[in-house]
Amino acid sequence: MIYKLLILQILAHLVSDFYLQTEKSCKNKADNAFKSRHLYIHVLITFACAWLFSMSLGYWWAALLIAVLHLVIDGLKSICKDLKGAFFIDQLLHLIVIVAAVMLYNKVSAIALPTWLPETRVLLWVVAFMFCLRPANFFIQNIFKDAQITVPTNGEENQSLPNAGHVIGNVERMLTLVFVMLGQYEAIGFLLAAKSLLRFRETDTVKSEYVLVGTLLSFGMAILVGVAANYLIELNVIN
Image 1 (tube, rainbow, N blue to C red):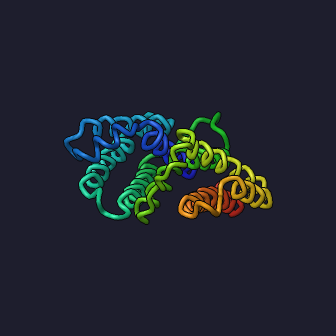
Image 2 (cartoon, rainbow, N blue to C red):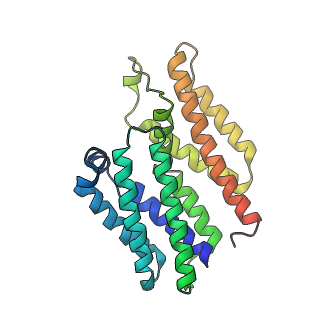
């Protein structure tokens, strides 16, 4: 039960921190830190998601703990926004808080989840697929930012379809996860080779290198997430 609750809480974090936040909200938080009203709205959403995804009325105090610490972490992150790796430190701290809150709740109260919930392994794959959509895009963007890799700005870049990169990345990560789940690793190699033929051109070295880095990060992230999910299931940690 504790693993199922933990997965549900990680799912709640993905929903509240990535899917229910806008770019405007994130920018306002970054600029104003603890003075931003968007920060407090986001914390309320975090509390609501943590409580809702717990499937238990008694989890309110653990959800409140997660929300309060989320407020502190996000506020400090906004103050230290120029620190390299701030995004990844922020996400690591959120994960530690979630794990600690679930473990504390498990000690204080008996975990009782509805019987209609899917198996834990199914929820794990839901988290994997949810992560490889919008959250993965943010992870890749921040890796580029910390590595000081900028988007090539030449005439051809303007000919690209708006947000096409995000859509392509989402699709390739979804397909990669499906192939990992099915154990079809050869298909991943075929997918990577097919994209390479379509996107890379020797006459545009800078853009090709940029796309290559993004592609490797995208595929690598999906493969790692998929392999980790399979590994946990095979170890019977997740049942």
